[in-house]
Amino acid sequence: MSVLAAGADAPSIATQLFGSGLIGVREGLETGIVVMILVAFLVKSERRDALKWVWTGVAAAIAMVIAIFAGIHFGTSTVTGLAAELISGLASLVAAAIVTAMVLWMRTAAASISGHLRAGLDRALAVGPVAVAAMAFFAVGREGVETALLLVGYAENAAGSTWPLVGLLLGIAVAAVLTVLLYVGAVRIDFARFFRYTGAFLVVVAAGILAYGVRALQIAGWLPGGSTLAFDISSVFDTSTWYGTVLQGIFNFRPDPTLLQAVAWVAYLVIVMPLFLRPVKAKTAAPQPDPADSDDPELETSR
Image (cartoon, rainbow, N blue to C red):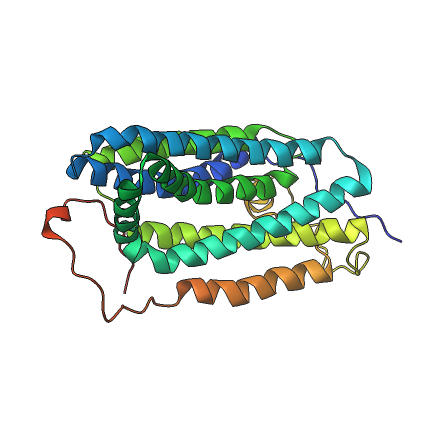
């Protein structure tokens, strides 16, 4: 039985910061927009008294995300050998699946997310403060869980480095600033273009995470073909160059992938990328927007 190396040395600090930072900006802005819509609706509805329940739900969601991330990171860092490869492989597959589902969902839901959130919050206000907090918790928690799993899968090849986490936090800080500026009307962003480009980026990242998971499971003995390489360009591909660290650190590229790894990577992109990039069909019976809400931040998808 051949023994494969799951990863090489950690990518450069700049690469780790850039990759996780971009993820932080994208996911943080997506979460920030959700919170912004909830807050704007309460302010315009003159229900500022309910804001504390929204922030309670947001705080609970953040605590849950931190617990999930810490649990997965602690679990993968306290075991070694084949067990560690097995956990890393399974975590990477779960991360790739959830990120894929969320990216494809956001592609179709972006055009109506503002209306759905406002309608849901209106119903929650009628029920009571617990319902308001619960709605904020699930709305933010959904995005947060995706971010936690994405970073765990992305950082698997960082050799225990904390720089991906630092980059993520910096990206989230940038997203928080952008959210505030959007709320006060200081900046405007073409959300359709932003989420289209960053979504395509996440699809390629998820493909790399999937390939990493396949290799880890091959090392653990759960998948066959660990000794069959698709190609080996290690002699001409220098992982210490800028392009080597970028490809390895952000997209989990290896100069010597196994055949199953390469097939999984190609098959994922061939299936998922066209699904993500295909045009979104306009709804025939879309509700007319309330003129009173014309100033609300809306997400619009490209037609």
